[in-house]
Amino acid sequence: MITAKEYVATVFETVKKENQHEIEFLQAVEEVFASLVPVFEKYPQYIEENLLERLVEPERIVSFRVPWVDDQGKVWVNRGYRVQFSSALGPYKGGLRFHSSVNQSIVKFLGFEQIFKNSLTGQPIGGGKGGANFDPKGKSDREVMRFTQSFMTELQKHIGPDLDVPAGDIGVGGREIGYLFGQYKRLRGFENSVLTGKGLTYGGSLARKEATGYGVVYFAQQMLAARGENLVGKTAIVSGSGNVAIYAVEKLQALGARVLAVSDSSGYVYDDNGIDLELLKRIKEVERGRIRAYLKDRPTAIFKTADQDHIWSIKADLAFPCATQNELDEEAAKTLVANGVLAVIEGANMPSTLKAIDYFQKADVLFGPAKAANAGGVAVSALEMAQNSSRLSWSFEEVDRKLYEIMAGIYEKSASAAKEFGQEGNLVFGANIAGFLKVAQAMSDQGIV
Ligand code: GLU
Image (cartoon, rainbow, N blue to C red; front, side, top):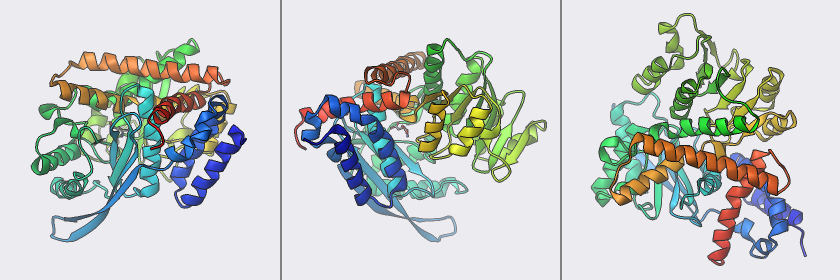
């Protein structure tokens, strides 16, 4: 009889062999697999059902051509994807990312993470992800509209309110969701919950825009409370300046923390007085500009380009990587630890490398992994679906209260799984196990499918 350790190692070897060039996907798989040996020791029937090898193979991947015409009349082609990874718990659910770095490895890593994240929320949603190697940055509204309409013309064949429900991610915000929804409606009719993150005038949920960032901070609150700490008077750095970062800053400030710096791909802004949130929103949400513009209104702030320095060299109590995958490597982790960081809470998906996570854990830094800490966005997406189905809309306060409860529940599940399986305080381990157990049970109950 094969041991649990041998089983997990054998499946990982197969995954490596079958997906050799998918570096990010393999990284996400490796991180989850490293937590699962004790689970297979406890439930050997899952080995018999070869559950892991089934789970790690997406149910379906669609890849398609997206032709579009720019404002000068030139014809372009991009590649679109939808990975329908697991429907064990419900319809595929997960965002769409429009960014030049998008490829099959990226959408698969995101889809794989989404399975466990969605499981942790406790809501009936499976895992999926999609996107295109199209960058909305620098494109006109009309170009973005033509691209998204072309993208949806193909995507609509594969999605539906009870089948697969996309939402936003990097490069896909309210504007893109609006155009996507409009095009879906032309082709398939008005089906409100086919997308989430919708505008408030056509079925969106209050507090969805804020949900990921707020949720990250609610999760941080739970982590700090377990050590008898809170956010009041703490300094924080938040990488990124997109939707997740902006609303993490907003909630951090509301709860009494001082946010010293934010960034974008061009560099970071340091403001010792605390980041001016209204200015940040104006630059990023209204003008869609670069973070450097902050200095025009706040000349005492400091801007460093990405070549000069990185945000992780700033001394602060709390670090929130809210930009993108692998933005925080071992070197950065060392700098943060040397500067006495108390906690690192991931707002982006897989922002820390495996070595960085390892370094934080050995240094006894509180570490909140993305699939637990940033689940607030998708959790409120599921609440949006619930509101759409019941044709009701809840108040901001009601959605926010539910979000808070869901985040506290995710912390509780992760912390207690870590304890039960022998690594108390290790939230990476606990979140992976708690997320996996529900999916495993559902797969097992549904037979070999
Ligand atoms: N893209 C977000 C995430 O990484 C949200 C997905 C959704 O709302 O479906 O979880």
